[in-house]
Length: 251
Ligand code: BEZ
Image 1 (cartoon, rainbow, N blue to C red):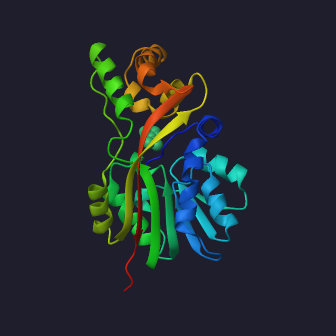
Image 2: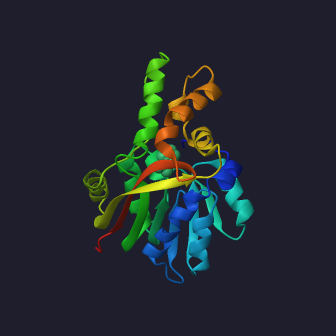
Image 3: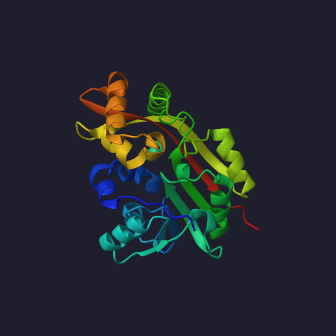
C-alpha cells in the first residue's frame, strides 16, 4: 500500500480547522445508534469519535501510520486501522461511509470511489467532502509563478480537485447514485502570523519540491501572497470545497 507521511501533532496543533470544518458532515450523514460507519481517511480520529459518540460502530482507516498512531493514542476505544483507501478490504457491511478532506490526495479517484462503494451495503450512504475545482488557485498560481522565475521546473500538483459533473461521473462509475452535490468557496482562516507558512510546510510539499532553499522559497511565496490572502486580521487559504452525498442502490 502507498503510505502517506504526516506530522500528526503539527496537524492537530495548527490545522484543527480541517476537522472542525468537517463536523457538519457528521450532521449531513445523520448517524443512527448501532449503524456500522466507515471513516475513510480518519486522520487523528476526531470525526470517527464524533460518529461513535452518536452511537455508531465506527471503523476509521488512514494511510498514514503517524495519523493512525495519534488517533489510537487519542481515542483508544475506537477501531482504527492503517489502510490505503484505494484498496479497502471490507465486505459490503457498512451502513455509511464518511470522508473528509482526504480524497483530493488520491488522484486515482475511480479506485478510491470503487473501494468505498464496495464497503457499503446495498442502500448504504456516502457523505464526502474534498477540495473542489478551483481549490487553492491563488496559492498554486503564485507558487508556480515563483518557480518559473527561479528557473525551477513546474511543480507536479499531486492533488485532485474535481467539479460536480466530473466527480458525479466518478461516483456513478463506482455504482453509486449521487443524491446531492455542492461546490462552494470556503475561505479558511490559517491561525497565527505564520499561518500560510505553516500551511505550506504541512501540506505544500508538491509546490516546494526541488527548491534548493525551501525556507527562503516559503518566505518569498508568503510575501507574494500577502496582498491576496492576508486580510481582516490574518491569513486565509482560498479553499473551494466539493461536498457530495450518494447512496448504493438496493439489489
Ligand atoms: C485542502 O484541504 O483543500 C488541501 C489541503 C492540503 C493541500 C491541498 C489542499
